Length: 590
Ligand code: FHN
Image (cartoon, rainbow, N blue to C red; front, side, top):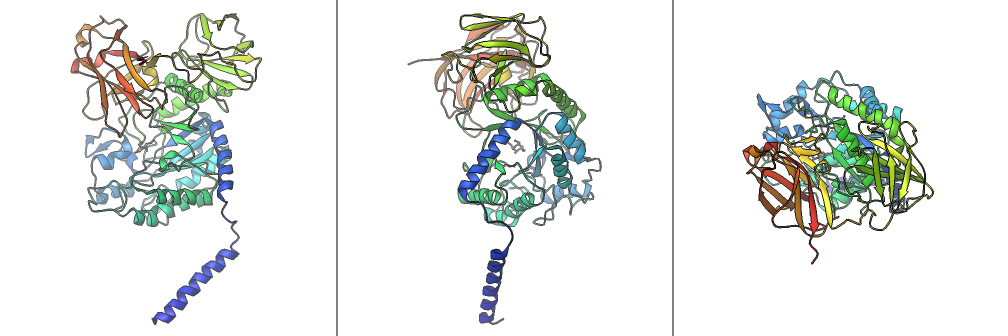
């Protein structure tokens, strides 16, 4: 074609788009101030919801943690990466994917029964397979599987019918199916051009999930890596232009999120409100995607306690289920979630819409949440018939159990209140004691306030992340055990300061160790997931005859506001029976 003619055509095409744009009925995109306003309103709604269902569902549910007859350690949705499965082999799984037992109504009903107010499901995880009908890539559930339907349509509609807010997880940076995305170096060892991956897949698919499934409460981006700030900004602007009320989590990268995503199963050690809203993504066992051999289900007592713990510190709890390849949420997951839902039916007033605690938490006996004129004390570990609660200056007009309304006698003893409790907990998981206050907001005595951390501070094993597939928590002894040495995914306790600590600390350890288990090496280190660990203390574990004792460890650890984690591990084949209840940090004032 003659160049002149070609130019005329290009200009005409350009004008036609311009013209179409000018006449299009769609409203102009909101300006930044409108976006900020709507984001603030959306964050308030998100904060009130407190508790959501996370769903990891994809082709990885077919191998379900096993590849060519071999058990594959680690989280199930990473099997393609761990086993370096070639794309040509992995994508054949799509030919088997036929979740005939999937029911959007059943999944949404479970979320409702569990008291979960929002849902986030993987639209595309790192393996690159789209669980929705995508015109941007034929590698999707409608075009590439015998199932041939779009479950996200059914699920988003089922949530809308129940008033459950709906959102998508989307892996915007890692994609092991694509040569220009991050992650697959075994099929694609050459240099990447992320711009190609973004233009051809990410932007078109994010536009599809924003356009075809109704109102989204949020998009949950994950593992930000090689995308530039400009690329992430463009991605954020695309979301806000199409759905200004749609929130973004911080894992979009480059500080472009609307709220903070903590690490996986990572809960700040104390009340954490200085950086705004945050959310903890957590598993019910040790994996996100379904693994047929992962039966390490968490205790509802632990999970209900963690819900109270997270809300009392200012966060939301996003608890995960990993459905099978047939489309069924494992029965143990369902049972746990329904137990949580029953507790919330009786005690939800102390969770939904509640504000974080104004108190520092001295131990793991109680947590606190707040509403105007009310203080909710979540008694997680029963203190016996006398409950001494210190630091509240407000007058208490009335005290009663939320679940049954029974009045609780109390008297004031200086800065403390003494409550007369029944011998046994009212609720096996979390007994909520409501204090009706004379003040709109609780007045807290100096020295007891959130943020006023003492120079001697306990970090309990219960408040740590149990990292590893063998480590266990025992409620009878309130201690963690089974620190089995493992080359990959060591069994450790990880505590997350989130900027609460700064300085040098001596450390005491409260633990029990039978004589036969002594002699191993306890390691205490600080660091982050991606920063080198600074080992602080190494100590040969001495026997205690099986009784719990407290011993001073040699040396010190240094924690600064950027410290990601405090890590405790125990080496030595004989050590697995050691029980760790807590460590106590003793600030070294200079
Ligand atoms: O790599 C993913 C992982 O598979 C899972 O989706 C978790 C959920 O928080 N996010 C990443 C690891 O942090």
